[in-house]
Image (cartoon, rainbow, N blue to C red; front, side, top):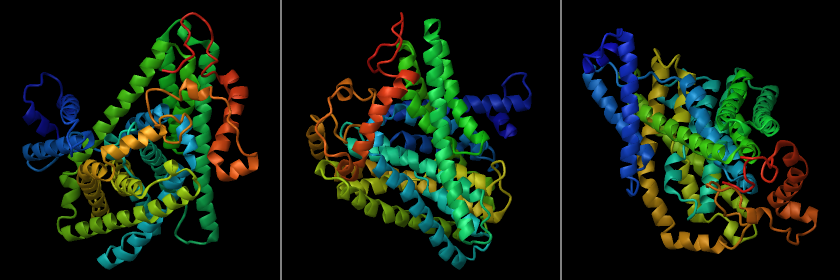
Length: 536
C-alpha cells in the first residue's frame, strides 16, 4: 500500500515511507468525505440517488482507481476493522439516534417498535439460519457448523434503513417515519446482542438446557445493557445538576456530556454487554434530563455536535464499504469457484426477502388489532414500505461478518472468503438496487396528496401517536401541560391502550421523583446564565 501511495504522491517530503502512507491516506479520505458531502448536497432533490448511495458510488470509483494504480494489489486506503467500526464509528451514530429521539412518541409506539425490532429480528434470524442450513449443504458448503449458521442469521437480520429514512419526511409521514426509525435502532441492537449471545454459548450439542442458557444470556445482555445506559445517563444528569458547570464554562458541560456518553458505550464493551443498547438509552436519558441542566449555548452545541459526528460516521462507513467491495484479497480466494459465491449470495438475498415478509405483515396485523383509531393503524401500503425499508444491509452486517469470518480484517481461508464476498455482494446489491428504487416506490405508494392529508388529520391532536419521532423540538410545552382528559378505569385502559396507560403513570412518577433529583425541564437552577425552561 505504501508503494501505491508513493506512486500517487512522489513528493510528500522528508517523512518516512509509513508516515507518507498514513498522511496520504488521511488526506485522500478527508477529500473523499468532502466530495460526498458536496455531491450529496447537489443531488438532494434527485429522484433516485441519496447521500448513502452517493458515498457508496464514490467509494467504488475510488476503489477502481486505486486498484488500477496498484496493479491489482489493493483497492482501499485503510483495512476494515470491526474494532474501528464498533469502538469509534458506531457509538456516535447510535447515541445521536437516542439523543434526538422524541421520547414520548418512541415509548407510546414502543410495543409496535419492539414487535418489529426485537421479535421481528428473531423471526428473520431463524428463517435465514434454517434456510441456509437446508440450502447450503446442496451447494457443497460443508465447512459451517450450527453456530456459524445461527451467526449468519444474526448477520443478515441486521437491517440498514438509512436510505429509506433519507427519503421519508417525518412531517409528511410521521407514523411511518417513527416505526422505520425505531425498528432500525432496536433491530441493530437486537442483532448484535443475538450475535454475541450465539458466540458465548456452546452450540455443539443442542438440548433444552443449552436453549434456556441461550435465551437467558440474550435477555441478560438486553436488560443489563439498557440499565447500564440509563444509569450512566442519570449519573451525568446528577453531576451536572449539582455542580452546574455552566456557571464557569460551557465547554466543560459539552465535554462532560460527550465523555459520559462514550463512557457508557465503553463500559458496556468492558463488561461484554451490548454497547448499542447502552449508548442508545444513555442518549435518551441524557436528552430527557442532562440536556435540560446545561446552558442554552451548551444545548445548541451538543445537539449539532452529536448530529455532525453521526453524519460523518455514516458517510465514512458507506464510503469505505464501496472501496472494500473491490478488495482483491478476498475475491482471489473464490476465483476458482465464482459460481458458489454468487449462488450463496442469491440464496441469502432470497432468505432476507422471505424473512422480512414473514414478520412485517403478520406483526402489523397484530399491532393493528391493538389500535382502535384508523389513523393509528398501519395501512397495507405502509406495511410494504416498512418491509422494503428493512431489505437493505449495511455496515452492521459487514462488521459482524468480519468479526466472524476474518482475523484483523484479513482472511486466508476460501470458505471464510466465500461468506465475506457474499456479504459484500448483498450489501452492494441491496443498497444500490433497493436504495435507488426507494424514493420512486414511496412516491408511488404514498403520493404527496395522501401524505398531506395524513398530516392534516393529526395536526390538531396534541397527543396523536402520529407526531414525528425525531425533530429539533422535544415534546411541546403545550403537550406537556395538557390537563388529563377523562379516561377509562385503569384496568380497562391498561388492556385496551397499554402504551397510553404506562406513559401516563411514568409521567406522574417522573414529575414527582425523577425530575427533582436529576433535573430536566422545569427543574433547571434559576441562576445567571442558567438554562431556560423551554425546549430547544
